[in-house]
Image (cartoon, rainbow, N blue to C red; front, top):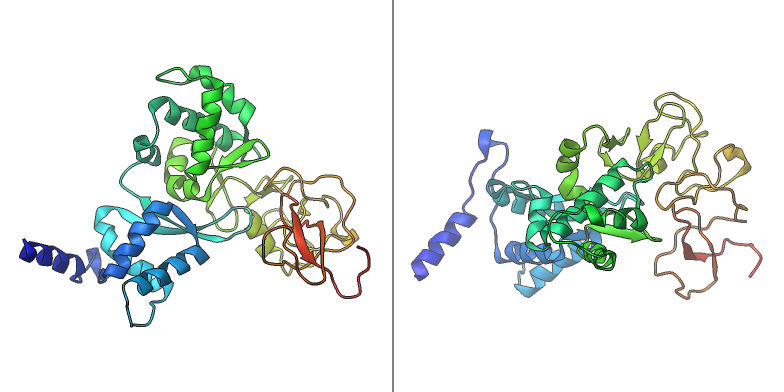
Amino acid sequence: MEEGRAERRRRTEAPSCTQGGARRAGIMTDVHRRFLQLLMTHGVLEERGVRRLQKHCYRVHGRTAAVEELEDFINNINSVLESLYIEIKKGATEDDGRPVYALVNLATTPVSKMASDFAENELDLFRKALELIIDSETGFASSTNILNLVDQLKGKKMRKKEAEQVLQKFVQNKWLIEKEGEFTLHSRAILEMEQYIRETYPDAVKTCNICHGLLIQGQSCETCGIRMHLPCVAKYFQSAPEPRCPHCNDYWPHEIPGSRPSGARGRGEGGGGHPGTGSPQVRAPPVWVCPRVPGPPGEAAPAVSRRLCWHTPAGALRTQRKPPGSGGP
């Protein structure tokens, strides 16, 4: 029996070439295996969480060797998982571009993967919510509109109260995000479902004009209709003296994420409309826009003032450092 275990481990750790010799399989140590198991339990993690997880796995197994670069570490695991049609995939959050990682099953559709956790009528509720999100201009579906479709679900009948609880289960399992009573796709869902969404909703799917990735939330040109993710908008217009559409060259009609509001911004200035869209909204501009300050909202710090911060699409209330020489409370 011990010889059998040793042989199985030897086969897992032995290098082998992929088709065409494009990538050579790495060696899966206990560190890699533990990392993979823990990532599976989380479903999706931000990059900083992934780095902490990697270091934790090295500490647990007492590895004295230097920690691999994260990219090499994950490529090593992916080279072994390739034959199983599983991959650790990297993506980014749509609202602010934070890097995220998720373990993606390439062999089954994401809805099929969810079948082990949800009943037939619950999966049908998710499909209907997904369709509303994909068809919407904002990338959000209201809970009211989703719950109004409960009578059309397949399988066992579901009351609206039960449907509300199921929606919260989707949030807890990181398939949906809820913002102010409306739902959109979690980064995990976008990573795992991109191909499924493109194939299932070819006429409704939206694509970012900059990165060409699937777009759920973003901004659009009012003249030619192209769309861009919010982080792509911020990066593209970062050094532009005047924001103009990369396709038609007309003036970009939205608040640029992370930019300082000013009179020079012209029409469309405002932002802080629908969560995640950066759509225009009439408001009194803040006196100043602060640099980003790490830490949760309300965290006390020296020379810190609480003001409305408009560098995020939702206009969230955050702790902000007061610029030198500024007055006020």
